[in-house]
Length: 113
Length: 115
View (cartoon, rainbow over the protein chains, first blue to last red):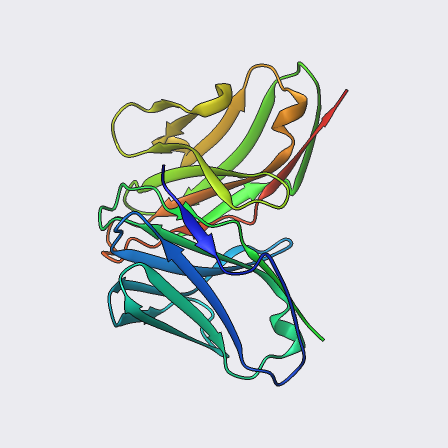
């Protein structure tokens, strides 16, 4: 069965802290994605990766960076967390076929105080 | 740029009633289209997808959607709502001209089912 896991379901951090969100997939997928989900805005793409060590900016990359050192793992980094980064963060993965489904993790609800 | 519009941030139906969730896309070339469902405190799960085969697509849990090119629509329907259908539903488009296989999501529609 397809599985995407995220390191934490809930996270509370303070303003200015460096935050790491981890995502692991066990399907040998080429593509991995990080989204943030906010009420009324749907899902917005932060970054995606189409191969190890390869990344591209999505629609809202400001304040975020990513790392993909291994095919199965994709990390989202908030260099200096701010209160406007309080949100639900969703990781997804897919093959490199344009018709393929994206498979989502359960999400991490991040609160920045 | 491609976009997806979901009409109605909240839709409320009675149990047993028809469910209709609307989705319109903007694209000069018919894209691939998806409907995802998100149950409370969970990630997104694929309901169904259109990839240029049959225009009427059947998905899980009794849902189906019809691709109408003339109306640039991909509305989601279910003949009879069940309490367990209460969730948030997202329409998404995969731009064919973009090789990165990104999805563009609508803002979501929360379905409420009344007993």
